[in-house]
Length: 364
Image 1 (cartoon, rainbow, N blue to C red):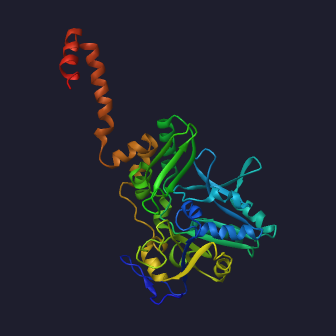
Image 2 (image 1 turned 45 degrees about the vertical axis):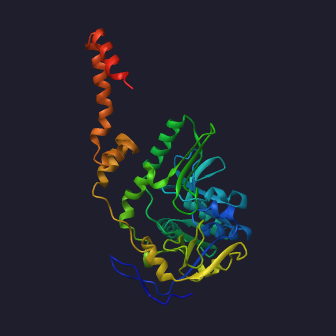
Image 3 (image 1 turned 180 degrees about the horizontal axis):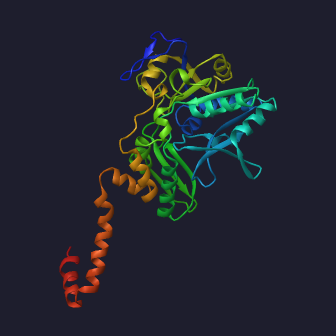
């Protein structure tokens, strides 16, 4: 459905939605829907390409879950590797035949084989791929591209520090990790980690150190992102249908995706969706973009950005966040208390130490 209102957005100006078409949708299969971050739009498009003999590129976690990289998926049963939001900066590499190789040449190799290729990533990822293909005169006729409505990935150090802290706390390696676990449905999101020793960590994402950092600190370039609004270089943009309320048509408590179509190539890709498996319906593009301002504008940069980056490297994620909250004393209070206790043990006579312990420490 073409939009009837051609302007969307508030605050920093209006965005012209003319020429865009939008849909909303979700997997009808509840298990597939729960495994997706929102409604599963990227997953259903990926399934369509693979069923036709093509391959799909998308972001995944490294084998140790300490970084985000890319994978090339050619079988439906392997698509789970790409599911779930990745909120950290990605490394443009792919693991193939027991070693890492550069991402863009590997995509080019697949395109040159004559197969259909779907590339999913952030707006800057799609732009970088297209620039590489143009510079190397590689035919992109078989390429479909999907980008994500992007808040801006947080610093890679945030993700790695968070995984480190979990593994220290649980004394075990992470074997599964997600920042969009649907514990009670679509919202609120939970961060969940499973460990090799059988233990599990689960917490509301925005209550966690990871969520707090993601809400404030992105890569420096993200604050001036050029690949939004009319500068999206993908065929389709997908994301969560924020703004969809329970009383509105098409709502699903387990997640709903939006799909914004940019061009004819995007419409070709949309036609491949299996409507029996994916509930797809027209949507008001102006309302969708108004509810998803990150489609057309980047987020603001915190005043303490540089300081946080330095503190993250020096202290790690948890202490850096405490400092951000003005908690320098909270960092050192524990160390000071331990130092005083140690000195007291060395200086005070035994009789006085026994009196303090009996009088103050053993009170109920």
